[in-house]
Image: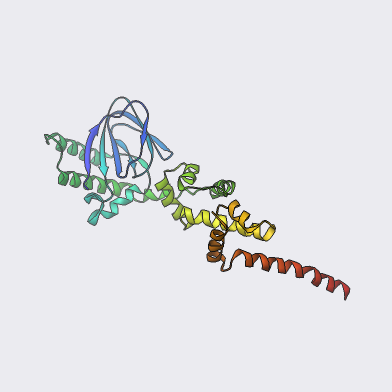
Length: 271
């Protein structure tokens, strides 16, 4: 797919959506407000924002306004091949202002648009987009890393998981706790923990099941239900994969250790 460059006013009532392509919005006239996955800001003439794909964003134009919008699919020529490094611009949302050279380039881009009776050809759009993205990337440089390093509050997520262990927990549920889109949450969660959300929840369920095995006499079938496994055999299969033994063996070993502790202590006191 190719890049699309278009001009449009934004609705003066608050709207929100997400889409599967990246987007850059640059103010041409008036003002507009954006909030992208919790990052808020305003844009006006010669300033803009970066909206990564699959990020829920709220936006609202103020009065008479007009924006230049670049729609950029992840596989667009302006983000792949020789230009693949430019995709790093979309590692995280942000706001930016155009400096003098980029303002001149924006004027040139608008003139190119005005000279095209219908719309820019796909080839021309890709070339113009790649040049703009390259210049923007050179200016923003490593600034992409700062928003991406914001850490999740894992303690808060753990509390949510523990409260809902006996119920199905979706990635959307966890993403809502972090106020992120599901796609952005998946990517950021793996970066921080090294696990997918599903692997993390499964590990949390198994840890809870192990504690119940060690500290209670609850039947295995009930432990399975309390920790979110559909039935006892599902718990046993997952437990064996994680700990190398079935839950019944761990319970027997634990009970044996407990039963031998008293005689040993008594023997020591009688000698």
